[in-house]
Length: 425
Image (cartoon, rainbow, N blue to C red; front, side, top):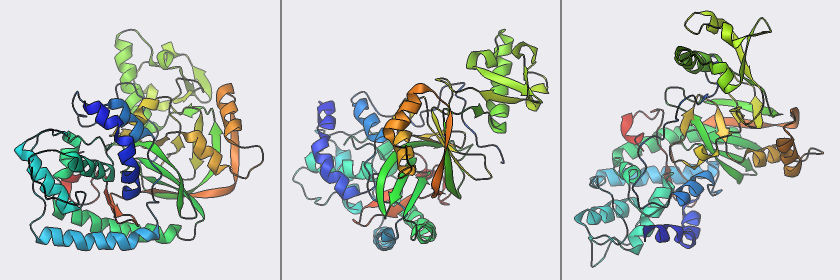
């Protein structure tokens, strides 16, 4: 059974993880109010998948190596030289658009052998059965998937095919573009003993200390039409069980359209979602608001702490001109998806309590147990960091780690100058 092979990947993935390293407008960037279903992105495979394995892998990525480390510069340069040779020799073969899985015999498997041999995931292409999807090819597929930010199932699904069929010349351009980014960022963090980085294309957050990843967190970043901004800042405080003030873009693009829709059926969006409206600091009665008028644009809106509050129990604050922040999420299932560009620009953080404990490390009275008690109590409060921690929102889609593994992530905002081909998975 496919699911048995996927679940049994744990023993194989130990070595795979070691091999792969890091498997790893003002006021407009608030939060997705989730008035409708959040897009899952591209379709996610067939019926043979062990979806619990996929969710677990995506929600709990291995620590790996720090993305912004200066130790990645030489390997990335070596990867560029290697990809120049691949391009010069004709590039990658195209793998047919059909799902492939271990144990299968198909003419397309031979092309899969050639493709993974060219990029280095398959160390030995020679086989007496080139059309057979055997165990060595399964391991190579898992290596490729993890190095491309996909759950290593060993099954060649639509996402894996899209990543496999990104041309070598496109990957080369991405590596070259990202080397410049990495060089600048590595210089910034070189003297930092502790820092946090959000790699937007990877939708992951790293807590780094002494050039070592202390913890890596799955995240949810901004949709392509509401992108998470690039920024440099410093984390200064944590808000526990925060009040949510709706930002202008969420009001205009989410709240008001939903208010108009619900008003037609005699319902109130404010009552349904537990949101209060204010005018000049005074609360406005929900029934007095005509959502088809201009008045809703001139009101402010807040949502009290609680299970329905999209900030969850914790908000991480840092100075920036984009009105963005990092926060918890009441919807944990989002972190188990391959495609996690689903917010309005802010960054949701899986297992944010662990990140908070690390940020507050050394401050009297703060540890994971204390944070858990605050979470359970629902008590509001603010903790200022005695030593603010540098924060970087970065955009890195192609790099190599010090073990020589070349990593790629979807160019979700198409900043690499290669078009849509590298954003399709």
